[in-house]
Image (cartoon, rainbow, N blue to C red; front, top):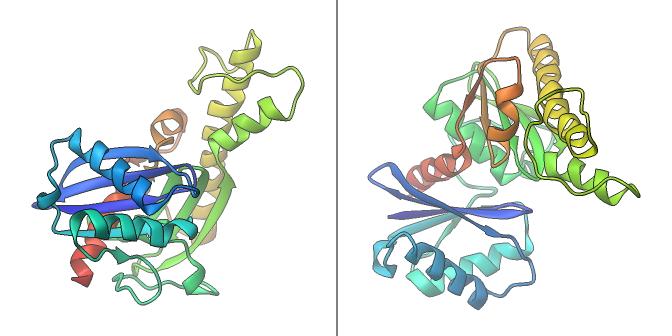
Length: 254
């Protein structure tokens, strides 16, 4: 089994692939203060829930947007499973060109999402990754990553509403029955859910206009299932696109 680990700002997604199949996905909270020993214990416990033995892991690959955790997680994987994990970064073979001002600055999660979309669905494509931030990545017809738009994330906006005001409460993230809210929680849910759906629709219009052709749209990330059903554009949901990209990169580099 190949372990794929995507370290995000809020959560760490962990997937296990056997025979090209994603067998399980678990998420744990990101905490840059934790040590390698603590993450080793966490990995062992969450994988045990899925019946994964230590001897079952034959390789691992890590992508990260939290640099302080890069070595910590690599040490944890090395200690538990005795394998040297690959780290997505400069020098790794991706199979796609990166046409940006500074290719080395492109986030590892963006690369993984684009690699998966290109190899699984083909190009061109527009990938919407909804995590701590909402990223909208564009891959052109030649299979090259040509840029991204980064938007404050759904929960970030929701948290700002409650923390930055005196009377707005914290509410659950779900669609209300109506766009026009009748009570404070539903008013907030309307703005967050329908507002973000409208934002994505508007950005899709602007991006396709700039590219000059319609683009198939794929959505991934933990919040995509909450928001994209209310978008008016056709969007294919693939919640684990980044983990699939990590597995493809592992195959390409080993």
